[in-house]
Length: 119
Image (cartoon, rainbow, N blue to C red; front, top):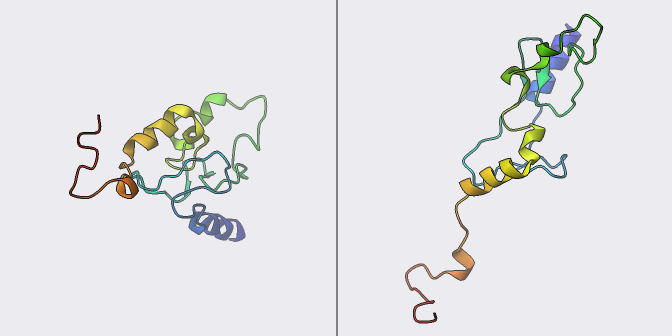
């Protein structure tokens, strides 16, 4: 009963603040990309994915033996859609940047082309 309650608490725990992951120094911001932060979930093996704790009682990594097939930890069931270290790569950060709308407001007039004739 206590383990189940602890797992539920982990799932309800919000790991993001304002669409960012401040506990990961290199994590990108999802703000303005249209991608919404997802809550942690329990995969088919009973392991909480996306809670940023990276250790779970049911994880094959915590229970490794000579009989453990490494393939058990492959596949999408082990990857969180928004709280995953893969977002810290250059390619994925560029993907997020390409989804953001340009911020021209401080330097653009909403109805006048102020650069006309300057080139």
